[in-house]
Length: 112
Image 1 (cartoon, one colour):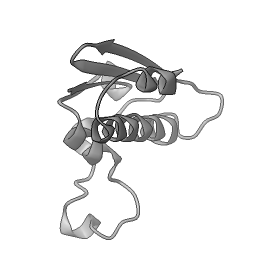
Image 2: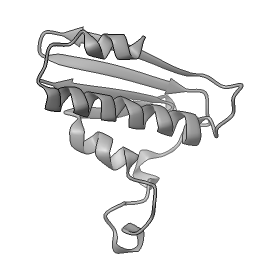
Image 3: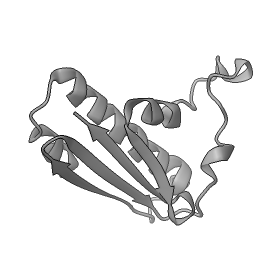
């Protein structure tokens, strides 16, 4: 259970909040955008914890995407949109964010 993994990490509340936000946004993106909200497709998550960092790997079963094609949520034409900030938040809150398997696998590292 991913939440049990997070609860087992002894960090300050701010870091714990950031970790939960990171994984929440990654899961939403994988399910809604990656898998196109298809209930027959899975999102898998692994969590590895070291003394000074945590790594999440989020994998969806979708067609993949090009991360550089995600609209910039800070661009003037996107400022009033109600969605589209998940990837931005993930990049801002992680120390490493990389994509593999044509964007279907996201590796997220947070150091503390």
